[in-house]
Image (cartoon, rainbow, N blue to C red):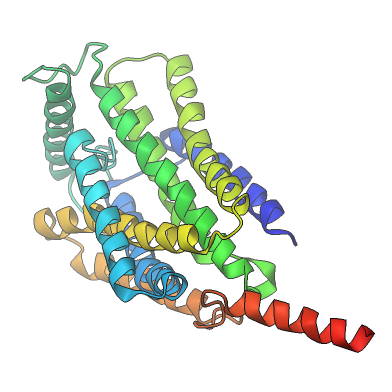
Length: 322
């Protein structure tokens, strides 16, 4: 299957899950424990994809470990700045869903958690607009900081998806599913990001129609980033360097996203350690399994290798014809 068709299918699926994420609170009860388990699993998957797939492949394409690590550092710094400036990984009311007693905490604990997280979120987002106190009941502009940060964040996710797919497609992926690991990491993370935006808007009493507009706009950002990078890279005569940098920077972005989710949970949540650790390790195991599928052998697409084999094959055919 042509890479562009696979990318379009991936993009349509990402749009679907992102839109569902914006409606998550109306579909299922997102308790604090469920949110933390999902974040831990996706965090492990992203770390695994970054270190086992994106960074090694980027290093091979660039033929420079130093350049690949520099790209990863750039991606990590960019994600750090996004989190610092826009506080992009506040996942809305994830702990405010008031889990039933016996689902990881008591009612009073859930209420306290909700009050703390909601208050911190409003303070952080409010400070972006010059406010120094929470405005829980008003239609403040604090949600726009979160939206803008996550919008940039998901545009970079699109770059990661396109670059991973192109790299895999060069040497044949398992069942033709190029970029499968990156696609899963992005897809599983998108519902939480969309949920964060709509839940913050809901707390500020924005209408359902306004939330839907924001949700639709956010869902399109990753496909825009992916298609733009893909078309730009394929239009170049030699896209190897661009693709290598795209993979390396994406590795840093994935590490930054994963740690932005995982480190706060490690620092501030002592409960359910066993479940969260298991979910984290399960995510890494999934990344390891995907990377060991047929068609993921490293070195199979080093710069010029594939082109050299292609040219050599054409030369042999030419000689045979003569």
